[in-house]
Each structure stands twice: as C-alpha cells, then as structure tokens.
Amino acid sequence: QKEVEQNSGPLSVPEGAIASLNCTYSDRGSQSFFWYRQYSGKSPELIMFIYSNGDKEDGRFTAQLNKASQYVSLLIRDSQPSDSATYLCAVNTGGFKTIFGAGTRLFVKA
Amino acid sequence: KAGVTQTPRYLIKTRGQQVTLSCSPISGHRSVSWYQQTPGQGLQFLFEYFSETQRNKGNFPGRFSGRQFSNSRSEMNVSTLELGDSALYLCASSPGPVNTEAFFGQGTRLTVV
Image (cartoon, rainbow over all chains, first blue to last red; front, side, top):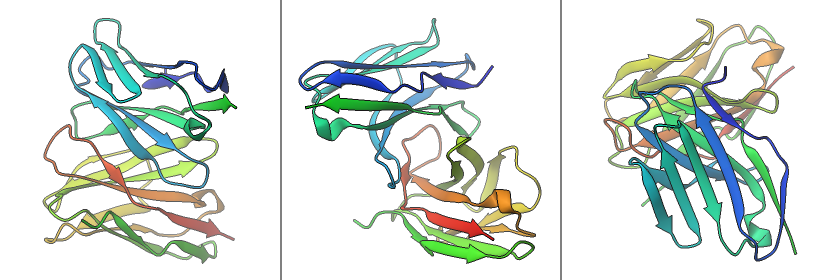
C-alpha cells in the first residue's frame, strides 16, 4: 500500500463547477497535510495546509481533513481554466519527512 | 523576500560521473528537504536537513548524499551517475523545526547520457 494515494485522473470539470480532489494516507500518526499545485514544467506551489480535523477555507479553496478515516480532500469552487494543473497531496508523517502522492491531473474546460 | 534558489537549473552529465546540486533556502528557513521527481515515480523524498543535521533519509542508494551548511544552504551529491538518475531534483525549504509548510525551488533538471 502506498503511503499517500491519489486518483491520477484526469479529472475534467466545466468552468464554474466544483472540482473535488481526494487523498488517503496510511500512517495514522501523520500530523500535517498539504496541497500543492504543479503546472507542467514548473515546480510545486503550496496552496493549502491543514493540521486539524474539519474544513479550512482560503478563497475558492477548501481543504477537508478526517483523521479517523485517514482522508484529505481539496475542493475548488468556481473552477477556472487557469486551475488546470496537477494537484499533489502531501503528508508529513512526523518523522521530518513529507511524503507526496502521485498527483491528480485536473482539466477545467472553458 | 527571495524564494528558494537552486543551481544549476540544467545539467547534462555522463554515466559514471558525479554531480553536486545547490540549494539556498528562503532567508530564515532552517529546514531543507530534497526530492527527486520523475514521470514514473512522482516526487520521491531524498533527505531532510535541519541546522546542519540530517534528520531523515528516503530509500535511495548511498550514491545520493547531502549536507547542510551553517547558513542553511544545502548541497546534494550523486556519485557514479546512472541513466536512471535523470530527473528533476527539487529542493524545498521550511521555517522548521517540525511539520511546517515547504516552499520549492525551481529545480535542477539533470540528464545523464
């Protein structure tokens, strides 16, 4: 079992819709959770982090964490074509090590 | 505030050679992590340094090594290069010391021929 799992996609949504990206992790001791966006040919860019169970909102982005289910998600409201990218879920296991999922490719159709 | 700076941006090396990559973290950040990114394997954790100490290491052979200097700048070295080492090597800096968000540099694209 991979430590951090994401659906590779591609996930295709129409402009203005909500995009829902999901991630599961295997280490119950994981303490912090991150979402990165990576455009083709660029390095990953941090968009959200969450440490506690529940929801955290930042503009059009909402991160959701459920530690009991070992599940993290990212919702993107009012999706725009510029949101088209690969979204990477990352989990810090507490051992000074952050593990990344393989990423979900998102396409937002104009 | 300057971001994470990695040098060089691009590198072409021959099998069997060695290479050293450099990373200057964001000013004030004391934790530096290194990752290898390939199309097939995604982002793979190499190692993490904080205050000149390696605190964790990923599952890579001993040919991959690193160090961190007192000014938090970090270098990683790959000896006896193999074709499979061709990848994007990314450095990420964090304020530290635990569980904080990381900011990536632009990466070094290494091609081994």
